[in-house]
Image 1 (spheres, helix red, strand yellow):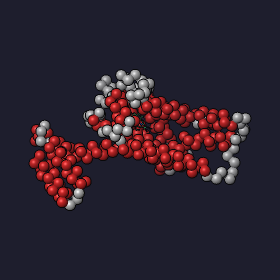
Image 2 (cartoon, rainbow, N blue to C red):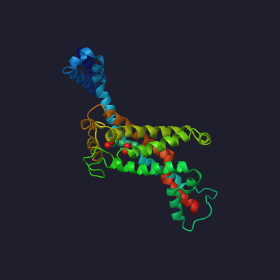
Image 3 (cartoon, rainbow, N blue to C red):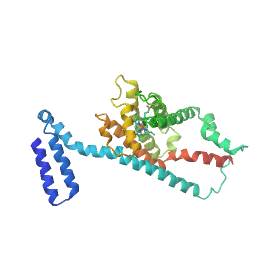
Image 4 (cartoon, rainbow, N blue to C red):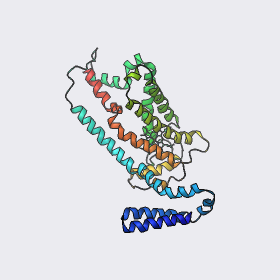
Length: 297
Ligand code: HEM
């Protein structure tokens, strides 16, 4: 098996040197490194498992894909999200005013305060759909805690003691976002919301659900299982520190073990989430107050 890898590597190197230039030379180098890697400890395993050799061969490619997801793509998606939000808000707020009045009655003596109350307390929803209101309140409070929980992973921020392996809320924040999200998803399957829903509504909720579930997997593992998730908050903090300092270091160096792939999937879903955010209904977070103000003025 080892000989086969060396042969494949030198064949690619030979061909690429002549014809295809440096990209393929690098690929050949990766292949030949893989072949070298099989020559030691893996040789014994090679005899018993063909899968091991295949894994060694694909691992440099997998590493490159995973690195792209957790570092450059994450920077790109966050930047895309910020620029996208600014652009969308610029377009929406710069559009001509609606030809009809959005005003609701009774009019408020203090429109600013009235709009604030409408935005954060949602009194009409509380009156007409109390269960939906309860889930919305739990969800939004948990989202703020979730943001704090992620920031707390940075070594410079210490809401939960550095030595603790728990996120803020010790796993309960994950419950606080995931259970309401399941409710939001299932209510879309019932009349009359079903008739008003488009595929994008379901897709967005499903994307966020899986994003939450992969985060939960790590956080609930760390908080609610005797041995934790293998990777702890302190391990994740080295990755977050690298991101915050733009070192472009490969997090694999500080996050060894197969559980790393769960983090990669979580971050891939976060990347997608950041990219779709400016074009999705989540933009209401920025528009809710201005619209309520229009209604109250
Ligand atoms: C910016 C990229 C992100 C990274 C690198 C990241 C990383 C992590 C890590 C390492 C954990 C587990 C921490 C621990 O157990 O100590 C986690 C948990 C979690 N993440 Fe993320 N995350 C990211 C973005 C997001 C986004 C955008 C969302 C959703 C909007 C999200 C939702 C969650 C949830 C729900 C949990 C579990 C929280 C809990 O149970 O308390 N993450 N994340």
